Image (cartoon, rainbow over all chains, first blue to last red; front, side, top):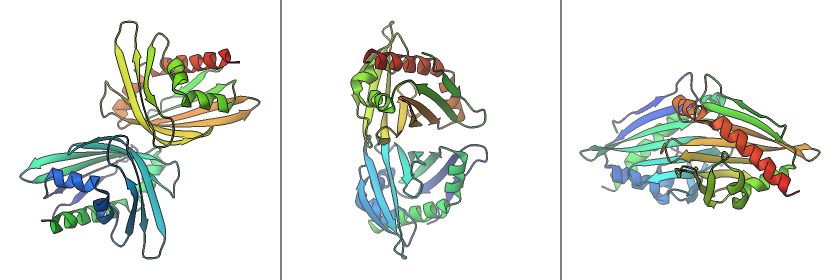
Length: 159
Length: 159
């Protein structure tokens, strides 16, 4: 688990960017983004129970999932997939029920690094600078760090 | 045709904002955004022939339309609808075939002004400042101005 999340939050633009390498083939990492059962096992911070209402990871598809914490409080997330290209690229919208209509757009590139390794490159765009700041301060970095650690653990358990 | 388009292109953020009033009820302007046959008659600059491949203006729906100029050159546009609330609000993605994967996110509010009038308030968000600049310089203002004039003409012809 030695691959760090590199997150960047530019001061003068409503973006969040990240990079994260994986010691797994691009096909395996892509499949874990496509399979709703896998999504329920890794997407979100540790300690949350995930329920996937639907997760249709294809161009024109949509998704909705709910995270429930140990305190029983639930957090719903939903969006649509503008583009999904196998083992290559996805563009999707993202909305948290707690901030209705504050929708962001996420670009996710799946890069094959060879030798059974790959890299995710993410770029998220927010409708206002304030929405971006709120997202950056919401614990997103920790949540993403834990999500990708859980993804590695899930893929490792299949080996 | 005395309702001007007010377009604003902020210098320091990858956004384009606009407002446009209409001397027609919000229900009529919304319906012209929903009906694919109406879309083909007003969306786009004058002189273009529009072909609507599909236009499913509802939450989770998608669209694709093609504009063909007098020179026979075609321009395709497509996206997905994240949110559509009747007579109220829509959020959609937007992609021009000529710039694949350079997708923007558009927020469109339908405001009832009373007395049979309404206002559209638009906010578009681009994945880079350069993409926003390119869109602003592409003749978007003229195209939007002519689109909304055509929309008024279409609604006026139904009176």
